[in-house]
Length: 131
Image (cartoon, rainbow, N blue to C red; front, side, top):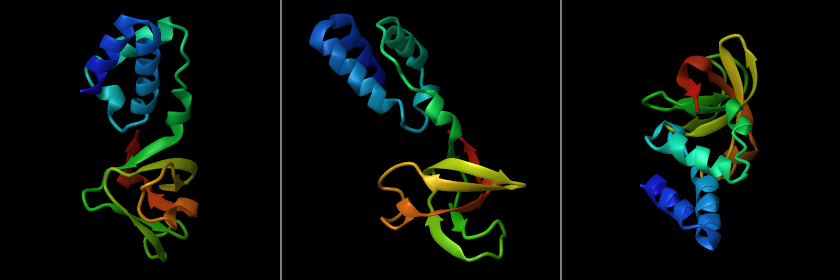
């Protein structure tokens, strides 16, 4: 997996360690990265080297957890027009909450289709989980 390789790179120092930190920054945004064993140790080592890892930006990120995905809707209603189908595992950013509904936007490329990346809409909160 990625974490043992990064840990090894950090131990080697120099340019290899810099490369390891760059890989860790990219790996860190993947869903479930922070749940893997060894993550905390590697994060501590990266922080000890003075590298900033912006974890706060992930606080507003959510993941579609519904087995069959979810619909991005124009308004917060189950009967509202569907704007896009969101697959299970898709990462979105919370813009606001309205009761049981959450207004979201895609947080990265490769989401559903190119048009979704410029759309915001509502998803029922029960279909989402913290990133």
